[in-house]
Image 1 (cartoon, protein in one colour):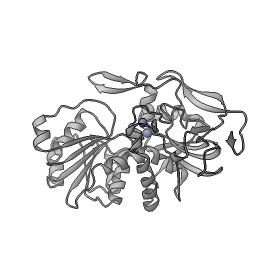
Image 2 (cartoon, rainbow, N blue to C red):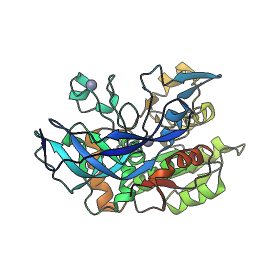
Image 3 (cartoon, helix red, strand yellow):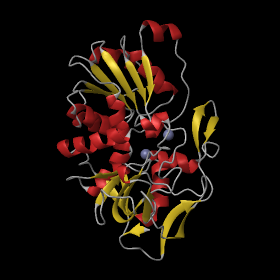
Image 4 (cartoon, protein in one colour):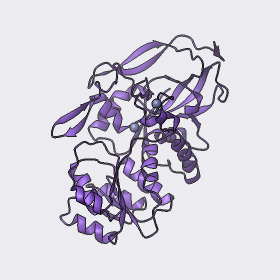
Length: 361
Ligand SMILES: [Zn+2]
Ligand SMILES: [Zn+2]
């Protein structure tokens, strides 16, 4: 039995039924939440770069090799959308802590809930993922079913459209930054790639009190924005002397690199500028592979850390941080939900300067 009012009729999901294929609006019967499930009307859903990869159906592994996402358990048809803010409309009988009409940010990186990794609170790393918008229907839809109330977080005073990006882009940068802390006052952090995630990282670093930030990006415009977000230096990686410039700017004291691009060149560059004991955090998924001399890894005691989204606990911490520091007060472009397909296409083609957020109704 479901608590509260029952919605009748159908709702629409914008889904694709083959990788790389067209999105179609498809009618579904309105789900009836049972047990611990919560049904929400989608209010806003961010369009994330990983939606482009899931739609394409692969990640590049370097030298033309691909990681096939169909073989990784993503079942067609897929309803994308993992940055969702929605309003609770009904819930199963075991749900106690939320009520109809509340607007919530949804944590999408859901695991099995039972394995040791999930028990430790790292559901985003579960080997049986049930992530919303990847393995389960996401927010390119009028309604979304969430398996448990614990995945719903209140927004506080955040703008609900902008708050949607905390579920993935915000969380991804926040979790990557947590992996390099603590950073001493004299140490420098290098941010490679100053698109949406990189800019958010620079802002988060500075607001966290880490002010020695060096930004690296090929785009002059993005380097300028990086500086206005608080980066002390910004360099073009195509500069012949880039390694020397970064080493000099950072007084040879670059303790961490956050790589939001993630290809052969950015990895090689990032590992090269780190001081002894430095940490390289790989976040970007452009694809490629690492070649790095093992003796350097050991004698410089370098850590190479992959960072994928973040935990539920980190998202809760981030929402609090964002409320305190007005983190998501950034320009976004709102488009109607019906335009999900063209939004993904535009993002894929690099035609999007900022963030696109889909609005339902
Ligand atoms: Zn698990
Ligand atoms: Zn994402």
